[in-house]
Picture (cartoon, rainbow, N blue to C red):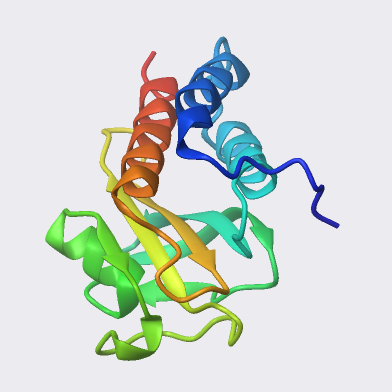
Length: 158
């Protein structure tokens, strides 16, 4: 069960990034860091119902560590919000996923989504965040999640 201590104001996002840096500091295992970061964001950010990673494996995105309901296991590149973000190499911020052409409904409760792609020599993929509210994510949240993905990407460097 999610706690009632989620951050509800954007003024706390900088602190959240510092906490993420501290959490991942000194650990380079990609699975451990993805699991901790997904859980941290899930519990810290208000009004989200899924936070997780998909990793590139054999030409498709494969489910990695996450917090939330069970999710789609594999996503083709260029399909859905995750596959589009990865293929286009750009963050996708979708106000209403039901209006996104080709949206893949892993959780029927999800209404808005932000997906941030990342690319390293060791591992590439996306950080995916869903909300049950339409238009939940604005520019501030997009920047937060892009910075979080960068913290994760930095943790993979030797």
